View 1: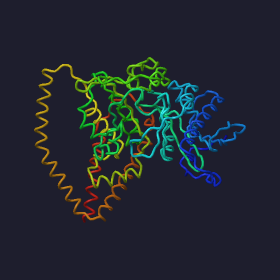
View 2: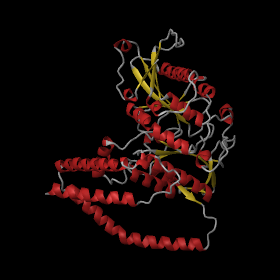
View 3: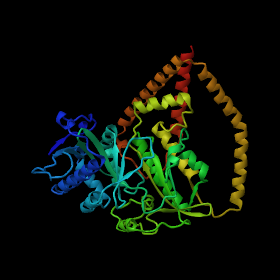
View 4: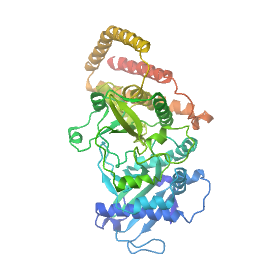
Amino acid sequence: MSASPASTLGRGTKTSKASKDHKKPTPAALKGAIQLGIGYAVGNLSSKPDRDVLMQDFSVVESVFLPSEGSNLTPAHHFPDFRLKTYAPLAFRYFRELFGIKPDDYLYSICNEPLIELSNPGASSSWFYLTSDDEFIIKTVQPKEAEFLQKLLPGYYMNLNQNPRTLLPKFYGLYCIQCGGITVRVVVMNNVLPRAMKMHYKYDLKGSSYKRRASRKERSKPSPTFKDLDFQDMHEGLVFDPDTYSALMKTLQRDCRVLESFKIMDYSLLLGIHVLDRKPLSRGSRCDSRRGQKVLYSTALESIQGNVKDPEPVADDDTLGGIPAKHKDESLLIFLGIIDILQSYRFVKKVEHSWKALVHDGDTVSVHRPSFYADRFLKFMGTTVFKKSHPLRGASSKRKKNSLYAKSVSQEILSPLKEMKEEKKAQSMDNLDGNCKLFLLFMFVLLEALLDLFADGVEDRRASSSTIALDDPLPSLSRSQSDSELDVYLVSHVISIAES
């Protein structure tokens, strides 16, 4: 076995010429190699003594070759020969221990029975596998995503130490399988939506509106995953009692600020809704398997109860850790978690946002600056998706009516001004030819990159900024507003140059 630095993670998927001559493995053989590889990696860790995690542990990559006939170090198997790479094994062992996952339980969940393949409702080409006991999701990731995750690990480690109760993904392992000329990188995570509970509605929510409606193909599926515009068409918001609403929003605020500090955007909230008033799902062996829940803080209810000191899982056979809520006269159980956090706002994403902003309203597209993305995400969740119940009405409802009237009057006054502004903007853009638009795009991206470099330099000089104070209140919007004003000035300046 050998160890190599993390820089090897993002290299291409080329293998030796001899391995390319082998027949490509079948999907079943690849799944089996993933299970065998994870089993070998976890078993190999048992020989290593427990110790504190060091900084260099996050960049370690262990590599071993597993021939089908076996060797002195590896078992024989009936899959094609393959190479296994295990990333930061000691760091991920610490994460599993933090969430109360014993090595034997981890191995049993992943390796005892065949993995269940899940459909992918998103735009990515990732594959998803679920363990038979509902505990773990195994997802394939791109080389850049795997590299970004390993770079993220030190900060992820610090934040989990401060707050293991979070709606962020819980990562339990990162592996790479090279078999028959195919390279697959997989990450093991917590499962947000238990199969033992029927999800009557599923949503992938970002807080944006541009192309945020489920496709016709997705809608035709037996259990489709809808998006932001679908939610607004189908629901008037999910109502929680004041304490639950406050705990949920506080958790989301803390998690979004953590993601913003890592320059992460384009993440989603995966939301599952079970309607209690409908015919209950027949309980079988899968629900019974959840009875012996292996992972701490893995349910939705546990994730938002930041002040609870009891380390034991709270899920039971009836709720499976769902959060109680209401929608009109229906009683609901809510399951949720933040997903897809491995998208960093780098140069390619800046080009994507800038180009879409030239054609559409830039504030409606999903790709945006991390600070703006977090603010928009939180506003959508806190006002449109989740709502707080108000048991006392009377005078408060009267005040609300008056405020709504005032709001409608102000909208009547401001809407013509907004329409005039948008029309003027559209006319000015139509007057520019293709070359000017390309020039604007280039200049805008260049200016954004320079601004980010300046901001990174300022952040580097702040020694204390590397540790995130999770209990801080939600920052005001003044920073994002000032950023937006600066961007408006820069864009208008570039447009004036182009027109001249």
